[in-house]
Image (cartoon, rainbow, N blue to C red):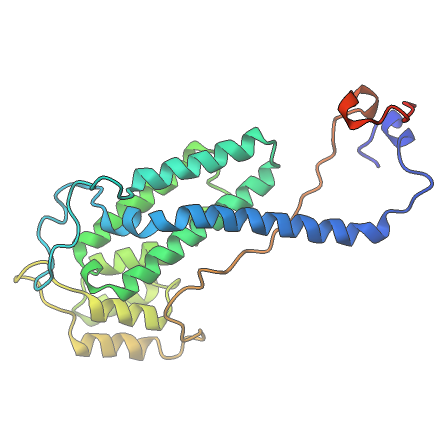
Length: 278
């Protein structure tokens, strides 16, 4: 009430206590938010693996395929396949729709953070399950794609909404594909760099790592053991894959309305002529 004008305070309910309805309305708001997020995820999910991993955004980087693997993706997107631009366009469509419907800016930030989490989680999970994706060139490709997502956040003024941080495990996996993996110093650097990845995820990427040519060596068993030894005291879950069903808890900010009730025009189609304006 302290944000109200004196006129608005005159409009406060005096004969009804809505306290018992607050929880009902709160539960309904949470349910609507979760349905919105689920709807968006269902649209976005089919685009992620193709757009973030398979499509070659930087032409020619993957010209040399990892040795012993068949070529699975073409350098030019086939008709009907999703690219990084498909993901960026869809994110822009979501953002535009929420803005046009007057969604609270704080809620938009939370929705975008959730969308970025699902992009990062699905991409990383597929990286951890596909040997043909674990190469130096693919690490460079992923890092470029992530930079484009960050640029999208910057353009929309959403750099501080927490979305960028949800991509940290994916960023570190991409860096892991690109760094040297031979000496004890390399192992120490990897252990300090990959704080957002679990030991299981780090070891999996190293095991799957595939040289792009005959001049590059596979990661040695001894090096992987060194990594495991250095990380054995970490307090973490043994999980390999990220939880793609996880939804961040939503919070609804209180924003006082500047709308004055006496200025509202009630449509005649609502048949509320019996109401008296006070």
